[in-house]
Image (cartoon, rainbow, N blue to C red; front, side):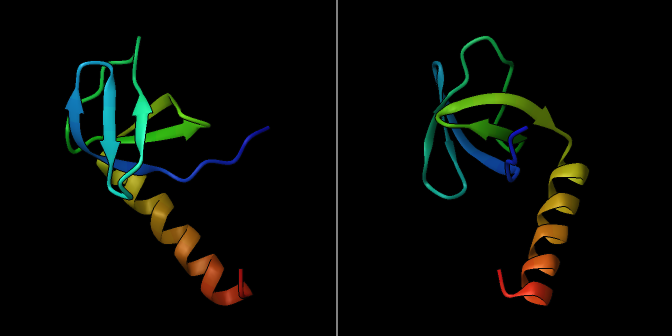
Length: 70
């Protein structure tokens, strides 16, 4: 099982998306638009999330890291 942090898509150009952290990932075969949240394994997008779910998961991870010195 892999753990991935949802990241927001900043720009899309062809089969490449740039994420909010500046990273570029392959989106071939997955419909992705700017503003969507994605889960990435390595350099490949494996899933999309609603903005609500993406933001909620990001907040949960931040809360956990503050409470457990991750």
